[in-house]
Picture 1 (cartoon, rainbow, N blue to C red):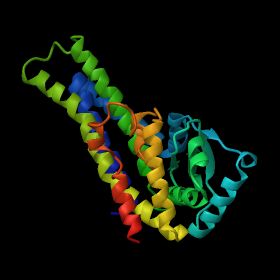
Picture 2 (picture 1 turned 60 degrees about the horizontal axis):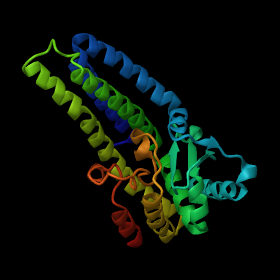
Picture 3 (picture 1 turned 90 degrees about the horizontal axis):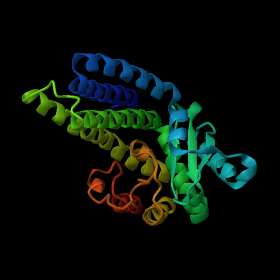
Picture 4 (picture 1 turned 30 degrees about the horizontal axis):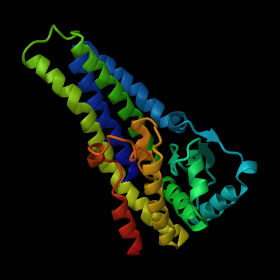
Length: 280
């Protein structure tokens, strides 16, 4: 399935879930209101995906004078990948991590953390940057950005519905109506997560493979992934959970109390990713 079709399917599926949840919370009026909000969110996610992701992760522009070696490395990799030079940003955290965003290669952004530049050697950093460039070349970045925006909105809407039910705002509904409302509030975010998982996991494997082709050095990325996994456990990065799937590894994987949530991770296991790279 082409990424243009995947984007359309994702936007449609998350919009339907959002509208159903709005109807479950506020009836027919909620249905229409949620549909209107979903249209605005999809439009915003398409045209302003880079700005939204930058804001959600607190990324700041990175000047070439502040990181000349990083800029030179990205230039060399973009030439190998036949891509335009992305804008570079930095996240103010010691956790080693990175993500890419933007609606197309000409509007792409790569954001790295301070911890990433400190932890990795040259080969490992090249592997991570090539992975993010692979997302750009494979047109994954728009899909991830749309999923982040819609998933975040669904989470907010579900919480509103839960508070409404707890405070008695839905007393007009009784019996089966109240049960359906509660089911929708609980299941809607889970359904959105499953959609994100189905898309994100397969794209991570493909980006790893493409990155190995770009650098010609699969071990650079595999070594980096193992270091990043340990780094995330030591230093969680508390970003908006709706944006976590955009990163090369889950930035929340080291947070306390998330062992159950790891069962529903949008990222494939690091061990599987490393094993596939080592077989190349």
